[in-house]
Length: 480
Image (cartoon, rainbow, N blue to C red):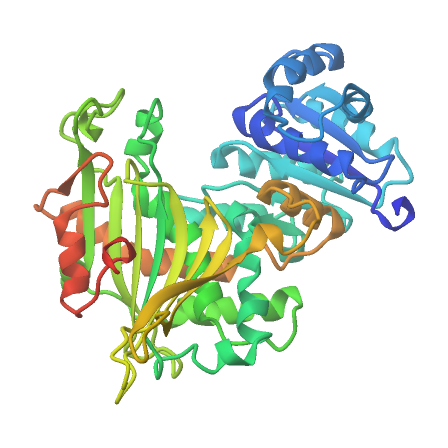
């Protein structure tokens, strides 16, 4: 197997940070343990911390190893950390980059170099310039950009332009870990590989579509970060937009990266733009409030008492394409909700002249906590001639195969090493998404209307239920 694997150097900026310790290194370990990394592939951790390799490995031992939940043996761990070296690199110190380039170029058998910027976006521009100045932007170099890529359209465009001065678009991997989820990737074969789904995946049969990402956790200790971010920026513009694209896109000409991303771009470009009046009518923003022993958002650490930042948002959107014209898409996400879930729901239309009087069918695609595809259908009640009862036909994606299921970050890291761009955002797609959400942000910036409240551990504000009720629809948890 190893002869088919790419020999790589992976340079992780921000290697002492939370993301590297919790996700990147544990996921690289899992790929290593499964034999999916070239045996000579190397990991270079870099940050401003004045460590040598031994000191860095001691931190990895205490801060990262605890996040390895499977396949951990001392022998495999020892062989994994043997891949790791550390260099002190300050993004604003050109001389440090000369040392980095020297370390990378000392290996002559490397197929490619992956540079992962697990840093704040303000460091992207100086990092890219200094990398280019020492030749670490050659064709075999791939650069991974961790979100958030901006806080609005203008800042996103600025970041992309800064990076584009030194790296070509085909070298840039904008990561969104939702695209690494097996259940989301499965949407394309589910739709386009099964004629019975594709035939009804349109406005003629679908009454409405719901996309939900709900979290049970509140803000915890992240108040300072979250209060300048909010649910719209944190979840809708990226994760929910990716889920929407996979649900609504047309079949691409091929599975090549650009063919897939071309179709995603068409979806985002076809979202009906919103006026300020549309935002008032079709967008609900809310904050969780105190409930029992659970704090409200305004009582959380480092949250200003007068904050209007949303911890919940629900949007009624429409996609102006022949397939979806007139079908409402309900998008919602929230903190401190009743349950943790990420799911896509297709509610089908009622059948005309239905002699059994059954309610409409429903397809639920769950990304978390379980990965399942569930179809609500009707069968005859035992012992009755005509009475029916609803049942769920469930496909458990975790049981489809005995193969190990990789975490999202592991799969995406392997895709970068292999040079596969399909599961990463292209610049035009990302900026179109920002363009669509900007009227919402602009409306909220001047609106005198305070966010709605919803009790912690509930399913959100009453206004969100009313948003669907206008169309005669219900959120999934309220459906039979």
